[in-house]
Image (tube, rainbow, N blue to C red; front, side, top):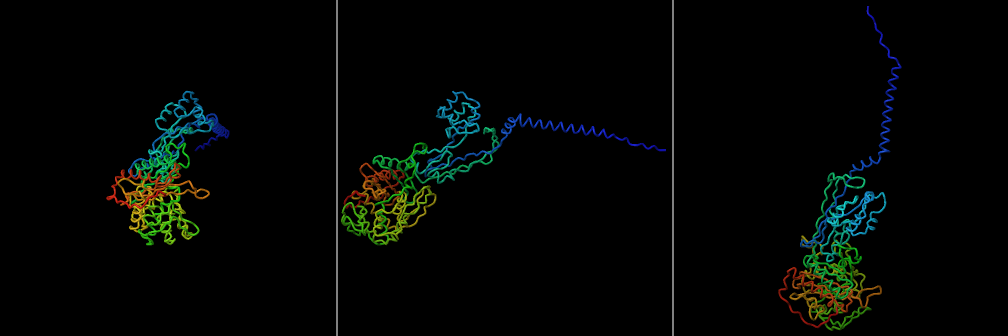
Length: 576
């Protein structure tokens, strides 16, 4: 017989004890976690923040090296050098309470007083970064950092340096404290010169201290070098002679541009007054203006060769044609006058004597539309397109608004405006046998783009006439260069005021070329408001042309004309 055993039943109260034990354990664990969280969030909050800061990863820009600016021969005109900027974490600096003698040492190294140093650091508790002095040389920065002051750090940057100083300042321009172009070619080509900044990933704390460089995210791309058309040697020469003339004649300002007659490249461009881009703290705003490109003026008698060229080109006059000037002539209700009564003059003598009456008689033979088109094709009223910031366009009024007197005034250089460089561009056509190249501030690697504005015979004929201007019988003997044939034209222009033309304020001009048999160089010189007695272009501007041209021909090893042609003597005057 089998026995059946009944299973032992567990009392319900045994389960109750187990549940209570489990709930107690969970409760204790919860209290421990809450307590720990409260401890970390409240009692040890500062420690946690510091640990978090120590593990802060950020991305820092890496400055790119700015490209160099070079002259046409590879000489340095602008270069960026490594420098160090000193900065301070004010919270860390003040917390360390550095000794007064160490503060004094730091202030003296940075050229500051202790009071100035304290003002720059400031008193705001929340500030954790402030520059004390930007872009100082690395040796000085090492001395400052060598003092071991808490919270004082160095940051590598670049500083732009201009070896030629004020000699090429107007052309080059300058950069700001961030090494960004602000004026001149630095501004015009800022994007290519500036390059592309890089990036690096860093680990730093809450005081902006870099603990560790983790990796290079993107390497910086250095800026491209820029080769200008100017020749540093010619730039120095032109600057020296122009400044000397301004001081000698106590002039208000001056400009000079020297161009390659065949390529249109600008070999020198200088202005007065100037400034030093390496130390700009004291220069005035107008001193930074590149007057040769930005300032406009009425060209006066320097425009007369083009009025003559226009009539010759259209067959409306001949070189041997004669005109009875008579000292003055009526044009409508107005009178055109010469300084003297020159009597009967041929076309060459009209330019040689700078006769307003003679050139007016020639110009009035030309239909207004043809006259305007000829000037327009020479670039008057047209942009130079050099890319230089602030480049002036000039003004050539449209022929539909002309009357006879306005056409007359345009023939002797009033009623239109131009810049020194625009006038130089027009003279390139005479120097280059009727072909007008585009001007350039950059060194050319390809032949210049040109267009024909007159026949070669017209350009050569007018150029030969202009040789007579640079003679004992002309207005520009002082523009002559020993051993070379020189062709050019003087100009003496009355300045305008709010009440019309001033009676005693002038601009003195000379525009010319050499060697005249086959010109290699074209130059325009403008002296603004000479006040030392003389003011005629032949007396003030022509000597500057002579000295700069003589030096330039020698430096460039340009051979003299194969034959020096004696010029016909027909009288003398120095009125233009």
